[in-house]
Image (cartoon, rainbow, N blue to C red; front, side, top):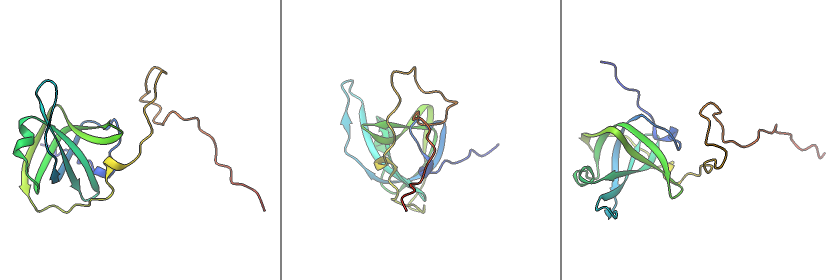
Amino acid sequence: MKMDVQTPVKDLRPGSKNLNMVLITLDIGKPSTTKDGHEIRTIRVADKTGCINLSIWDKPGTLLESGDIIRLNKAYASLFKNSLTLYIGKGGEIHKVGDFCLVFSETPNMSEESFPPPLSGGGGQSSSSGGSGAPKRPFKPSSNK
């Protein structure tokens, strides 16, 4: 069986999807409850390239503790309140694979990074453009000598 490629935290961007990652849980936030009665926890997770907030719904969030090493399959990254957040996708999985023995870095915190706002009104983003939608202008250094 082929091993899935692991995505480093530092490479996450809004819209990243089908991610496979191995992370360590750093802190687990207090749960909040949705109008529908679902319990949501924000968990700060990290690998050797940086950290990010992971949003976990319902029972899986109650089973994790700080220091757990987890493997995520089919995760995705999206902006929530202008903060890059990691989620478990439909059909995705989270597994505890160990504890306390994973090299990690708390910087950069990808949940505190700035990302350009999504395009609006123009029919959505084109996956083939690969850009931010901003017009491309060549860089011209000033010639004040």
